[in-house]
Length: 345
Image 1 (tube, one colour):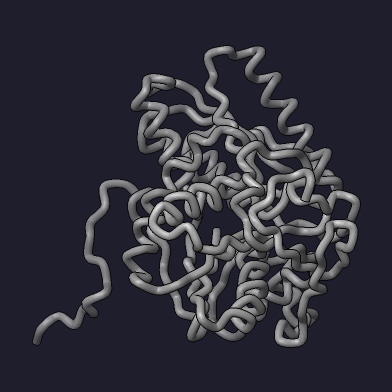
Image 2: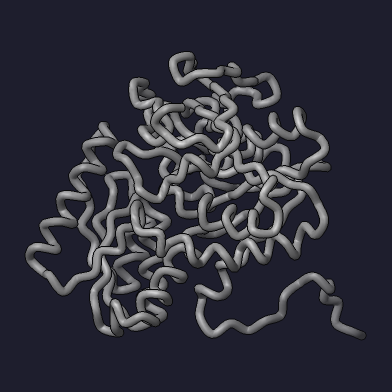
């Protein structure tokens, strides 16, 4: 009897886990919405950066790489260091879960985790100050600066090629959480070398400084990987065509809705992007909307998935469409950004 292996199933034997997990699963959610689901999207950022730094001699095997992280970049960097014989030191957010911390420690990373803190802005400030302390005490360390160094764009060129192969001759838009800005910029720039018209839709939580909503406070804003409490140099506002701002409750609705409708267990940033993509897809049925699903839902089990009975119905939600940042309105606002620089929007 012949082996019944579907033709689209990879049988590649990988030499390291980073090669196995970096390629996403592509899942069609509707006629014009496709999800790029990752175990950890930031493996592209970490691998691309580390490979470039090794190639130009900035770092060498045995050196220590240090950075601040809320979770998935930390794990990606620790895996890249494991692969290339580098040491890793992570200054971890208070939101880093015991599951991620245990993996980091087993991989050989040194972990400094910030004490419990309800103010994520203070959490980020403390992490950066701790990095500076480490660099003063250990000048041989290399600070990866995932928030600011465009070396983190480089690995996403491979993802852009994958997208072009998966969606040949299909008009599409990219819907992605903004976060550090590296994945959005790293993906959209090589895509636009072939088609400058591809729209980029950014998703932000209320309270983030990246697109001007810092005057708002969301008590439950734990959407790691979407927004920022401090300015990030890798965020390129001029690349975005549309920006959406969501509260935690609406992001939770998208996250639970994604699992209910499609059995996809993904993180809160993915749920927020899914909610936005579904709305954008109804407005623009002529385009496929590519949703970037940065990670799985494991670190949100207690605060999101265990509360699934409290989740709002995503089909009943819609944004307030605005023309100015002065008009930002929770729980969901949408604005045509028009690839403008910030400030002066």
